[in-house]
Length: 98
Image (cartoon, rainbow, N blue to C red; front, side):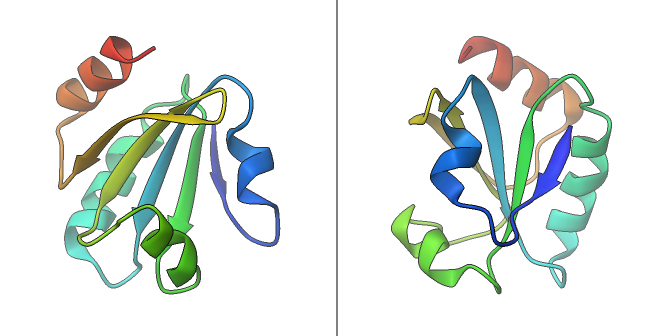
């Protein structure tokens, strides 16, 4: 399930279970390709955060390049990946951090 952060509180969105947070921008080519891969991950909870709209949040997590994906477990950051990944790499990364 993919959700886009709008006016919700970020902490409320990541507090329960495993959540993959995707920091992206609409103008970013690799982010668009990663977005298509994420759409295929329908069994995962995914929160997409537009870095142009939520700059302070991106800075607070040290996002320097996009796409950046951070995996949270019950509100705690457990792993971070930067750059485009294949579906297989993404699946393996998520599985190894659950």
